[in-house]
Length: 517
Image (cartoon, rainbow, N blue to C red; front, side, top):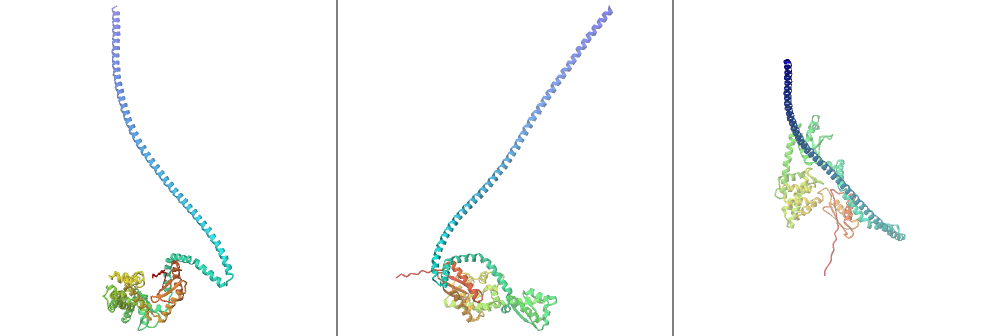
C-alpha cells in the first residue's frame, strides 16, 4: 500500500514535474518566439525603411534621368529644327534662284519676241523700199537706155556714193577704233623688222666710227689671247668692235653716239699706249668716260653762254651737252637748239614778248632727245618732264611740250618756239634736203589733198610736216571727214617720199554770216 502510495506519489510527482517542465518549456518557447517575432518585426521595419529609402532614391534618380533625357530631347529637337530651317532656307534660295532664272528667261524671250517683231517690221519696211527702188530703177533704166555707157555709169556711181558714203565712213570709223591698238603693236613690229633688215650708207655713216692703227699687228693685240681683250672692251663700252680685212683700221659700231665716242677715245689711247690688257682697258675707259663727261659739261655751258640766258640746273646743262652727239636727219641737234633759241629770241624781241622765256624754252625744246631708253614717250613730252623735274617754270615746260603740237600753248612764247623749230628744220641744207625738193614736196602734198572730193582748200605747213585741209561743211559729216583724212594720208604714203611723219588735219567748219544795214 505504502508502495502503491509511493508509486502513486512518484507518478504524481512525475506528472507534476512533467507538467511543470512542459509549462516552463512552453514559456521559454513562447518567450523565444516572442523575441523572434520582435526581431522579425524589427527586421521587417528595417527592410521597409530600406525599401522606402531605395524607392526614394530610385524616384530621385528617375527624376534626374527624366530631366536629363528631357534636356537631351530638347537639344535634339533644337538641332533638328535648325537643320530643318537650314534645309528650308536653302530650298527657298534655290527656289528663288530658279524663279529669277525663269524670270530672266521670260524677259529674254519677251525681248527676242520684241526684236523679232521689230525685225519683221524692218523687213516689211525694207521690202517696201525694195519695191519702191525697183520701180525707180525701172524708171531710170528706161532713161539710161537713151544714154551712153559712160553717162549711165557716172549716174550709178554718183547715186551709190551719195547714198552709202556716210555708212561707209561710219563703218570705217568702227574698224579704225577696233584695230587701232593692234595697229600700234604691228607698227612697232614693222619698225623693228625694218631696222633689222635696213642696210644703207646712211645707217653705216651714223652708227659707226673708225680708228686707224699703226700696223695690222695691232689687231691681234686688240683681240687678245682667246679674245679676252675684245670681250672686255665690248662689255665695258657697250659697243661692237669690228675687226676685218681692212688694212690698218678697225670699226666701232653702236646706235648710241655717246658710247661710240667714249669707245673711240678709249681705243685710240690704247693704241697709242701699246699696253692692251683687260685692266688697262678698264682704266683707260674710265679716263675716257670722265673726259667725255667734262667735255659734255663744257659744251652745255658754252651753249648756254652763246644763247645768253641764266644757267639752268647742272643736270640740264649735261643733257644739253649730250645733244652734241645727237643728229636729226643729219642736223646736229645742239646746233639746231642754239639756232632755234636765237630765232625765238629775235622774234620775241620784235613782238615785245619775254625774250628770256622764249630763248630758254627754245634752247631746251629738244632736251628729250638726250635721253635714250630710260623714259618712254615722245621727246617733246619727255623733255618737258625733265625740265619740270629740275625746277624750270611751267611756261618753259609748256613751250617744250608744245613745239610738236602735243599740248595746247599757254603763252605766245610757246608758239614762237614751235615756229622757230620749224624754221630751223626747214632751212634748205639744214637737214640734207635741197630747196627744190622741199618746194616740190610741199606742192605735191597740196595737190594730193585738192584731188579729193569736198576739199575746198589745202595748206602744207610746219615745213611740210603737217597738211591742213578745209572741206565743205555742208557736204561732209564728221565720219566722212575722218575717213577723208585717212584716205589722203594713204595717198601721201604711196606718192610722196619724205623724212619723218606728216600730220593730216581735216577741218570742217560751218560759218553763218549775215549783214545788218
